[in-house]
Picture 1 (tube, rainbow, N blue to C red):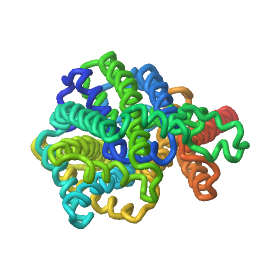
Picture 2 (spheres, helix red, strand yellow):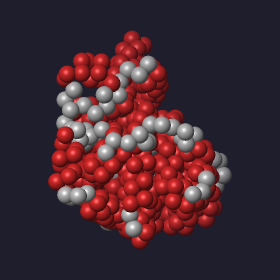
Picture 3 (cartoon, helix red, strand yellow):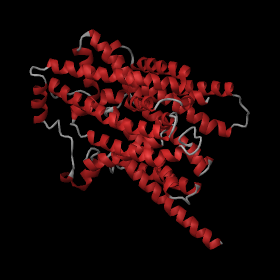
Picture 4 (cartoon, rainbow, N blue to C red):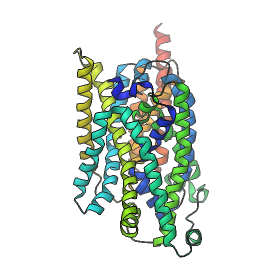
Length: 453
């Protein structure tokens, strides 16, 4: 079971680094990020700078705590620090977030498949999920990571190839992109948002401050508390290897997002303004404008991006379910063969549930990347908050952590319901509320103990 979920702890850091990039890329980056740049500009790049800052914090604050013990999941730390209830609560939150967010990603993958094959979107979703399930079931985390390494080069190669064909389709190549996009401010990277007023500033997710803070806290949560990424980091040999993997992935991700955003600007120069869903612009170019052989290469890249995230989700969901929820509760004595069999059955079950989850997002008109990141930001605040509470406030207890987590989730529900801020602020606000509430609870508990004594 340890080999199935952790790859025997002997995977080189550079493979884990590439695997992290591939796991967080998914079809959303391949389809939705060019579409977002086509619709707006390069403001999303501000968020990726925050991503790198957040990974430095994960490398030097979270990972040393993880590598002190023989942890099998991110939430094992919470059991050691607070108790089993906190571990179970955090694991359930991760599972909810991962199923919802990756349901969106699975649907995004189906978009070009059903457009190309002219089949029902449901069949495209099933085909994608079953393909990822096949090698996840047979190879475990080690198989996932090494396949991810190849997949990253496939989809980046596909994106570069698409960019070359877009430039060749324009009358004056890159000069046409510059003249067309510059006139409509498509190359605008930084947006400080000071001219929007306070209400507009906090509601716009792509201001400089919102992007840096939101990206940093989102990255701290996703790479420090999300089992999808932490599972890979725990598979390295030692702390320094994990630190190099997570920081290196941040540098690559900035370059990668820049590539896909520029693709969107180039598509704007090619098509001009159109009345279509932003997520359909790049697939439309792939299908209608590229030669057949090249279309196949690009679709292979798109599917590579999709498989890397889906396979990682299946492994992380089944590992968290097995190690955080099932084994601590079961009273049966299981041998390794039985544990592995149950783990693989859980992988199958989560593949089915991801298919069901993806069907809920088929009618959405929003860019799928924003939906997925909004879902993740919704619960990441509570998760990151209790991890930081455990690291920063030494005398905090399980009751304080759970109190902070619950108040945080309620607070974020209110903010989302009344549409108070943009999605990039959700994690930062959630973390602040969780730590503040948990800290107050810790102080009050200490005062009560002093009075009783």
